[in-house]
Image (cartoon, rainbow, N blue to C red; front, side, top):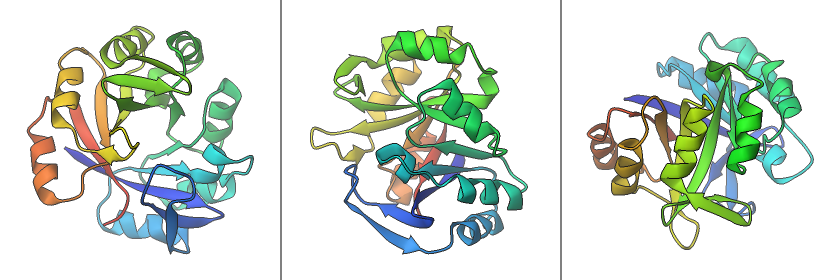
Length: 216
């Protein structure tokens, strides 16, 4: 199982995301480029950069994302409020290897996935009570991901949340979803807080092939 470090950026610094709400985070490292280099020294094979500003405001951290891509010899993924083809193109122009887009309606996602090769784009889904939540709309998680799979989406980053919108590790939910997709690979994002949970995650369906962590 691949462990993917995540660097969350706000105002050019690294955040430790303690909760889903935008204001419930704290800075834990000032230099994101140095942080990326440190992860590489720990033998990271890829990493994800989450642009907190782009997700929650009209600002972005593109300069820092480009700098991170420029100093690493491994693929860099990027996410954070990405919803349109133009936004995907903007990140790919920074030498990002794969863009993880924010889940929207199945129809909107199917349109988006027609624009790009499947290895350059994936989706992030928030799952609450077996529903993928897209703004004010929700969809059955299995049906939603099956529809995206038909549109040539083969990578989904999955965050399972409880009723309070806290990220949790829910192996039974993830296992049930993985058993219903064919070519799609799933990444667990959130809730892996100790080695015991990581070990359990490794025992799940082979389609669950990676986990994301926010800090060592």
